[in-house]
Image (cartoon, rainbow, N blue to C red; front, side):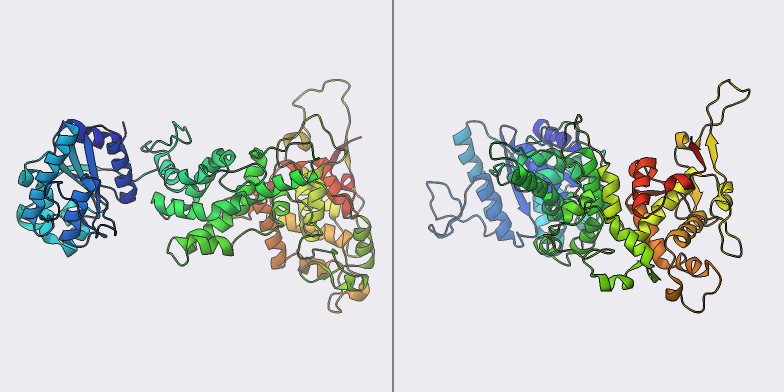
Length: 591
């Protein structure tokens, strides 16, 4: 049984006149949940008092009596408060405490006539610490309201402060029954049920966020032809989205209202790529083909969360201290039209505005100024090879589930990487694959050069099939063991050898101060842009850093990431686009 349910049972079955509920993080949502559960019980009347809104005793008295009688003052009637039918306007219940107590008795008699059984009245007071600051004379009467009125009424204080900081001096107030809610956790209690989501095992804080910010939106009418961010099909995705937002925000705040405020600001932009993908499929479909809006694949959801993680951190910095509001922040940070291409790793569409990368959109006379690294000029041979290897076909990664029987002649992931990654990042990816598959002792034989700049003769080990079993343990090739770890220094060294052999500038483009072969390349691979590209590949999970960032002894250790970065076929396609024969650079390969 949850803490809220225990409080409800305590009020329903016992006769405690005063209960104090302490919630350090979300007192407002606790009061909302408590009232919602009490209203679901029969023979209980509830009234909610906000001590910030009711800043005078008159407002408190009128709100209590009007709330218990469900009376709503209107302008047409002169904003009159409730009064019994036989007394009309002759009696007022907000002049003093005595008048208020008489009003409670008249209200009890009125309710008893209607319901036959006198109901139990529950008064829930939010922010009672404000009463001590502005109206200290009302604290003691509220705590002793049952004693003074001689009625079946229970007063519940819900506050983020302790009772010791609120209670009046000299022990005049009644000692309450204490209830501590505790700090909500992601795996905490299931305090608020979501009848719309029908979830039975969902953290209480997530339920509070969902119920507070989305229940009224999911019920909005929506058609498949014009989907909106609150389409009912997105409800399962919203559950995962809330968990993702909570993981980012819970370090700074545990208040579900604050987390829900940030989640509500980012949600329309989070599902925009899915809606754009649905619209694209609808445009490409035939007139008789019906396209249903559906939840994307797990792989795409992972790409989606990875793409929007930095924006959620930015939203936390702006929205939690209220530097701006959620509507303005969402409008200023709305994803652009090419966000779907960015998430899928597709080449930019020619109809969308984007920045040119590498040789894209450049004239022939502008090619000498293009650089493959921050200050590295390309040679004419490399530029011509790169322009000739650019494919002209658009490739698409799966957004929604597709037919597994359909096959493609080429791997779309590798082609997409070959088109979208910067040139220097592709060299780094190939260098990382070589470092993961080749032993460290083979680097000197594969890439070593003499003082004259000439390459040494390479010796490649070819794996031969054993006709007879040999004694001792068999050596398993590295391609079957998966990618091996390698230090950052080794990656930089292999990268320099690849750039010197396949991307070296012409002699006329070489600065005069560099006379030793490889000296210019060695300087280029030590620039900050190279390390920034390695960090970018790590964020894309194409490289995986295995050593912790706080480790100071020894160089950082890496390995190639799962999927495309560790596949020989995919890396070969990327290397072929750069004019590199990957099979000549692998130490162990089959005949």
